[in-house]
Image (tube, rainbow, N blue to C red; front, side):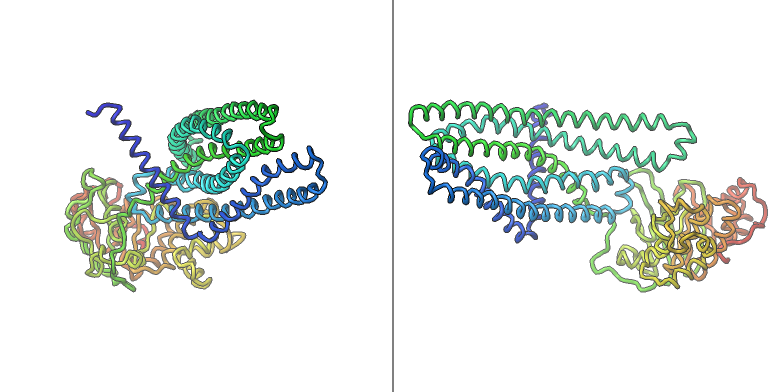
Length: 603
C-alpha cells in the first residue's frame, strides 16, 4: 500500500496533466478565429500603448508646463493627451468586441458539440447517468467555461500588454526602483498560484454539487403530483434545501480563497507603494530626480496595480474554467458503444424478416437478461412477447434497432447482421409506440411529423385521421398548430397515445414495435387506440409486448419469456391447450376461454 504522501503526489500530478491537456484543447478551439484574434491583439497592443502613454506624459506636463511655465508646450501636450485617451477608448472597445465574439462563438460551439455527443451516446451511457448530471454539464459547466474564455482570454492578453507597456515606462523613469519592485513580485505570485489550485478543486466540487441540485430539481418538478399525493412536499423541500446549503458552503470556501488572494495583493501593493513614496520623495528632496519623473513613475505604478490585480482574479476564473473543461472533455472523449460500421449497408425499405440466432444479452456484468434466444419473425407477421416483468421482452426488441448490441449471437434483418447495417438506415426501418409516450412542448403538427419534419400538411392530417386523432385535434383552439405543453400536458393519456401512433403511421416503417401501448388507458381510450393500431399494424412486421393477455390473443404467434429464456411459443388456442406457462398467466388474469373483447391490430 502506497504512503499517503505518494498517493497525494500522484493524484496532484494527474490533476495537473488533466488541466494542462484541457487548456491545450481549449486553445486549440481558437485556431479557426486567428484573423479576429490577430486584429484583437493589435488593438490590445495599441490600447496598452495608449495607457502607458498616459503615464509617460505626466513628466513633460509637470516639468515643462507646471514647473517651468513653458507655454509653447501646453497646446501640443494637451492635444497629445486627448489623442492618447481617445485612442485608448477606441482600441479598448475594438479588442473587447472581437475577443468576446471569439469567446462566445467558441463556447457556443463547445456546448453544441457536448450536447451532440451526449445525444449520440448509446442507451447504456444514459442508463448509467442521471439526466440532471448531464443537464448540469451542458448548462452549468459550459457557462463556467464561457465566463473563463471571454474574461480570461480577453483580460489576460490586454492586461499583459498593459503590464509590458507600463513596466517599460517604469524602467525609463527609474531603473533601480523598478528592479526593487520586480524582485519582490515572486513573493506574492506563489501564494496566489497555490490559491488557484485550491479554487480549481472547489470549482470541481461546485459542479458536482450543482449536478446533484439539478437532479433533485428535475425529479421534484416532474413528480410534483405524486409528491403532493404522498404529502412529501416538506421532505422534498428539505432535500432541496440541503443541496442548496452544500452549494452555499462551497461558494463561501471559494469566496474565502478569492478574498485572501485579493487581500494579499492589496497588502503587497500597499507595501510597494509606501517604499516607492519614501525612496522617490527622498530622491526629489535631494535633487536626484525631478517631481515630474517621480509622478510619472508613480502614475505608471498605480496604473500597473489594476492589471496586476485583475491578473490574480483571472487566475481564479481560469481555474474554474479548467475544472469545467476537464469534466466536459471527459464526456466528449467517451466513445459511443453503438455506431454505424464503416461502409455500413444502407437499406431503402426492409422486407421485415427478423431473426434472433443464439442471442444472449447481459447488462453490465449482471445476470443475463436473455439466454440463447432463437426466434424468427416472418415479414408481415405479428408476434406477441409475454411473461412476467424482467423476463427479457423489452431487452429483446431493443436489439432490433440496435439500442443495445447482443452480448453473443446475432440479430438479422432480411438476412443481414444488424451490426453491419448503416445505423440511420436501420432505424428508419423501425417505428416504436410505447407506454411512456414522448411528446415535445411544440405544436400538434410538429409532434406528429417528428422524424419527417418535411412532411406536408396533407400527410400529417392523413396520419392523424388514420390514428383516430383528427377529431380531438380539430377541437383544440389552435388545431394542428396548438402547443400541447410540456410532455403533452394539455392532452389526455389516450390522446397522447394516438398522437404517438399518428407519428408512427407517418414514419411508415416496415417494422413496428408496440411496448405496452394500451396498458395505462381506460376502456374507452383503449378501444380508440386499438382501432388506431389496426391501421398502423396492417402489412407490417409487428413485435408486441403486453402484460394484458387479452390484447394479444389474435396475434399470429405468442412467445412466452421467463428469466431470459423462451419457454413457450405458438397461437393462443394452442398454448391454452398445452396448459403450460401461458395458460397459467392467462388464468391469473381471470380470463377463461377465447377473448370476447374486440380484437386489436387487425388480426
